[in-house]
Length: 292
Image (tube, rainbow, N blue to C red; front, side, top):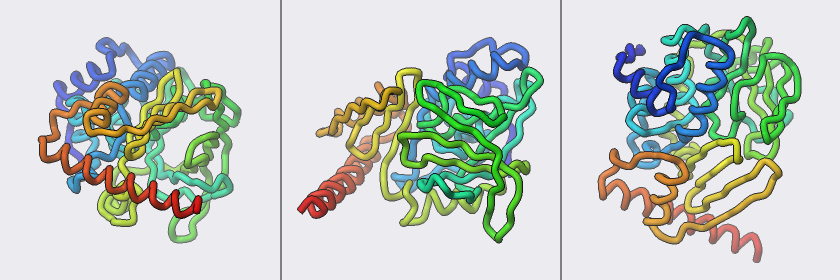
């Protein structure tokens, strides 16, 4: 059951985006809001790593984003959909799936995708990847350059239970999940609860196993994976820095990703740094074994 976002929460959300006068629904307005979102609100799994994952009620996500937090796709796209609806946009939510295999046709359910009608046409909108498009794409087959190159195409997709039907596939290069499929059929937030429970609580969930924070800008993609801070430029150039101390780590969280830390106590920060360091050392050990 979702709750309503208050006028103050929505105003705080818009302030976080740096858009105080969004205006009437328009294609230009939609694109400006989406660009601001991916640049200012990070993809993150801090709460999951600390064992207190936030729920995916969109009103709660709006409140958290207004307070300086981020989230993953169910939080980010869920909140953005609610904001757009409050501003008068026509929004449809879709069940999607992120895939490392570029040939997969599975729509899964571990991703929330959005389509939005503005300016008399449909747009694919996604502020919930962290390393996705910098702005929306027209919902039509084509190749789109936004620094990085994206390909959108209609596709028959599958989902749990053996069903199959119409949908779309987004292809992108240079990221761990180069394909995202989503069903054309509308979805509601309750459809994402099973995947959210697994992603946020299961020990074999990637969000439980590794800390990650992502932010997309016109300059490229910033990614904090454990203690490795990686910037990928549109030309494919990567800059990698290993963060040696907790001060460096939390400095990157606030300065690179614009994520407030006032919800984390001193004990929380120590616990998160210990968890991140333990995973980092295990990763380094596994690399040494492979190299040997």
